[in-house]
Length: 247
Image 1 (cartoon, rainbow, N blue to C red):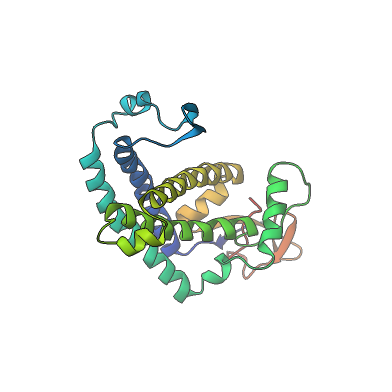
Image 2: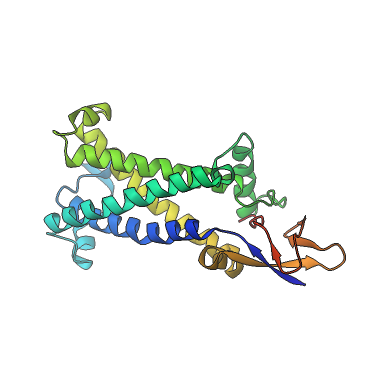
């Protein structure tokens, strides 16, 4: 028998789907700005092993000679990114959702277990819960990364007005490097996150869109069967917040 299981509150879903395009556009407009001083590479001296964005990349996507436009868009989107993040943190704090999201002493062990299981190196699935250890660490890290991007962005946008902040971050060049590395971190997070969503399947994706999953219930025990673990069901048609699949 199948039951509808509530998963993500409406507020969490709004914050999630609002943040995704805003952060994507911030990265896009950030590349317009970065084009004007494209200096980062992997190498030493005059030897370059890898250049992050060759000129052909900017030309192919028409991203060259758009410094002023990029700065204007980046600054406007920064406010949307900041306000959405602030409201998200306030909501999780006052609603109690932080209890599911903050890593605990078991999270790092679970994260290793999740990683080994996802790569097929372990046949033992991680504990079934709303957010596993890897997700708790990743989602908390993204919040801290957002704060880091905001502070480093202010430091490099207004290095004189926010001179104290720029110096606190090690100077203009240091703040810019941190800002760039954090941006790369978002891209890595996006790739892994989307891959995990695809791996988890439609039921998991539907939860962040509609707020519910459809789970199988053991007719004999009346328990929700979630992966290898059976959990008590609240009713035959609607159960409270249910655990998430290991992925």
